[in-house]
Image (cartoon, rainbow, N blue to C red; front, side):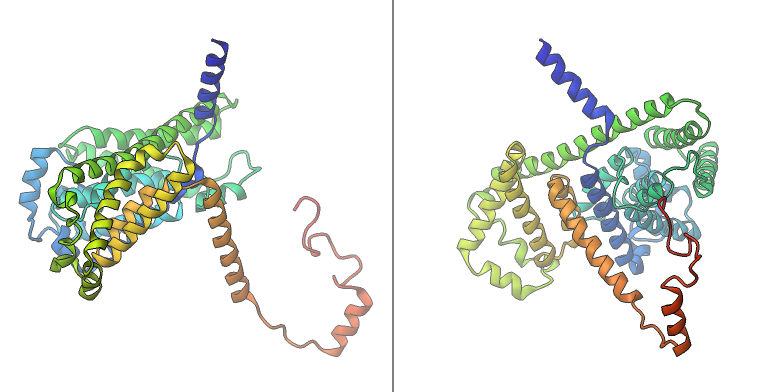
Amino acid sequence: MNRLSLTLSRGIAKVTESALGPYQSAVIRIGFAGTWLLFLLREFPHRQELYGPAGPWGWNLAKELAADNHAFTALLWSDGQLWFECFYLLAILASAALMLGWRTRTASVLFMVGVLSLQNRSVFVGDGGDNVLHLMSFYLVFTRCAQVWSLDARRAVRARGERIPVDRVGAVLWAVFGLALLMATFTGRFDNGWLIPALLWTAWVVLGLWWAVGRWAKSQQPRILLDVVANVLHNGALFVIMAEACLIYATAGWYKIQGSRWQDGTAVYYPLHLDYFSPWPGLADLMSSSGTIMTVVAYGTVMVQVAFPFTLFNRRVKNVLLVLMMTEHAVIAVVLGLPFFSMAMITADAVFLPTAFLCRAGALVARARGRLVRHDALTVPAPRAPEESSAESTQGRWGSPRASVAERGGGPGT
């Protein structure tokens, strides 16, 4: 009994004291935001046909469907062209801000609003990856995904030591966010359901409460309580994201088992010969020229998808299957011309990557960036006059013998 209670107490302490998986949550933040950002930029010339008020799926049809399925989309608040263009630009900016980790709490909410609004505006546009993005944009709101590899983390390091750091930008964003919510609520824009409006108002109140506690609380207890709640929500959301990825693969694998084309090993052959999924016909013909390869790929896909949820308890086997699945999605991106679907699935897989691997990858990226910055900043000094050289040799490297500590590059506290 004592051992059981000790194990439970350790588990509760682990869940409440820290936000687990900081590197994994940073990867999925960057991955999903980057995937959506690239999609919006690529489809920018075609945005009118996809989501515009005068597109093939007309505004009235979308309004009727949203009234039937109660899906949230801010694009149906107005059928004006200006509103659509401004919202599309807002979705791009929110995706970029979330990817960079700038004001992540606010950016994650705006990212969710952008994803839900655009996808629910035209529900028949997508390639499968949009379903993953749809779900993950909702889960990301509850995660503390800016602990590392973000501008917020860099700002927190710079502000360390300040009891109440000044944050005028955050206050302005909070005020604008609240004003927009107030206008949307009192003008009856949230008439399709209560979930998204409740989530938006809750996020706004929590952001204000977080700032107020940090500024006016006389003890650390309120801030500790908020940290505990945030950690529990983060860890729960991260668990749901992992469970969602496992569910996607498990259901896909079990449905494939029931298909006759997957049973006889010919299921992969047919998509390779569809014009819509053949950006490289020569490569598709080369891959499908061997029946053995097609059979191995079909059976291997089914086995990997069905087995993956059961391999999470064995780290080595799990890592091998991760490599196989990521490779498979990379091949799908090239051969079938589905880059955004593959990017979304690879990002979902990345939540299972080992922390040590992510730390090494981050260190390599930081090292490469440091070398690039130093190379760009490298300048050749101008030749000095003879009198300057003699003066330096007389007075020393730092000029005057009485040069201040600041002039010599800092002191013990810097």
